[in-house]
Length: 207
Image (cartoon, rainbow, N blue to C red; front, side):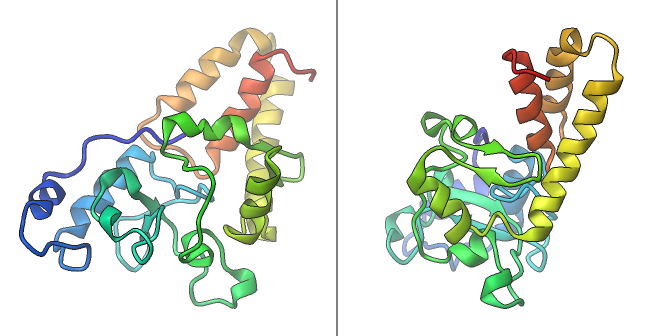
């Protein structure tokens, strides 16, 4: 889950100006920096690395600007997203690039949506949701089960599995591992998958 922080002052001030909108907001570097910081450096959807560069990331409106113009400058509606294969064919696109103006049922930055409880990962890196509607959206709206994304999640799972099986008394050290990973100023790409796995172990799941 993404914990939203304080919006950049430039966004606050811009919203107070007459005729302000997202397009005439001149300080998007500030916004990108804030989003990257609160997302620990990762894309809000696929968990790949973000960089504060308009050519390397997008500012995503969870509820799109076309349908929800009143939310275009609302910080809680803004997320940092990767480019999502924007120059590739539609079948190879993912995240905000694939989503476009379509809606999602759950927002990873809304605490009450409890996104972490709504997804799970298989050993091959597949992301799923027990919520049937959201499970369809993970694939058809966000494209999160493309081959390379599954492989990256599998690598994160394999790494933490190796730690689990090679560490003596690993179960007694799980909470420390979770705290270490969660409290890092910047996450490793796809590390939330490893955190999910560790939380399953903390809950007593079988090895």
